Length: 287
Length: 234
Image (cartoon, rainbow over all chains, first blue to last red; front, top):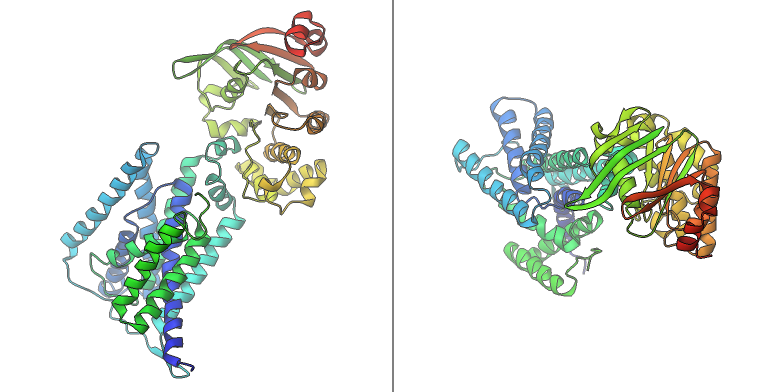
């Protein structure tokens, strides 16, 4: 029997997947190119959300401009994460980079708590809920999904068509030979970090439409983004993309048949089982 | 064009090159020959800035190479075709060539350069969308040379272009080297395949345990009793 509520759930899952895919893409890009996992990635999203919140709600700057500023601020943050934290640690044991970005996670959370307190804020913009054939779809989610897809297409075109994009793809295949092509690896890493930050900023623009902002909001997205990346094969952008939609569907449909929290339980259980079956990830190359 | 004077090089505390003096004139092809582990690859890596020289002078058209950062060496007109080709295996031929034209001056001439290398190696044009990792060994060497040519170099450094290739393909690779020469590029080539390489170069240096033991024209070296006995086995 056709169940309109199930279809609505699947569509909502798909829409959720767009933003998760965007987050996973940013994290995978950085890991694939620099071989470093930014544990604090979702905290950069949090910074972007606060930026947009303050510019829009406190200073009355139009939302579109505030969003663009949010993307720019997080892109600069991404650049700084590499410049100040990762770059001095490149070439040391990978655990150092994990600890450093993990430390940054707590630093950012605490710093924001200190500045703005723990209260939940939102931009106070209520977007309509759309009705199609008896299904209710949040316009904010639809907008987020479409923007995420546009963002991902833009990234694809950048990587496929530009010199810097080609260098970013190349450096993940052969690090040492790049210098013979006249490529300064440091610049490629900084560009990648800024782009990764920019993607986190874009995610912030989309999440700020749907969620309240608080200093620990990163914890709602960070762990799940890591699991998506690992499920898809760390560093594999296509794998992460596919895994994001698998994950979001499992959460949505699992939540439909049981309860919302159970959706997450089912998703994490599948993740654990998958790690036994395919530890390199769905599309992972390294075994 | 390229001048090396009393160049020393170290890997950590290991002394790899001792007082190397070497010169390559415009339009020449020069080989550095010698056994495995003699320091041939290190010599090219020093010229490309991948290994910092411990002492001595290196100049390209009068410019001091020691003051140039490694990624800027290519802008002086030195392109390095590394050992084992080192293509980007999961990228298309065309993308590999695009990376070869990464420097600002090369980007401006990307189309002309692409036409030039595709004219030189038509098989690459026919397969431009194929992943470089799926090419045969000889085609990969062709692609690696083409990638180096995309930077519009004056001089090509080639590190063991025949290594790891089947004998028939080795012949083809040396034909490629001749082809490059006919196009007017200056070539410095490092090889273990001494008999073959001496047929395509003007002059050669014999490198043994980090020092130059002999040098001369190809004919002189081919005629040298010592080299024939030690390296050619006749």
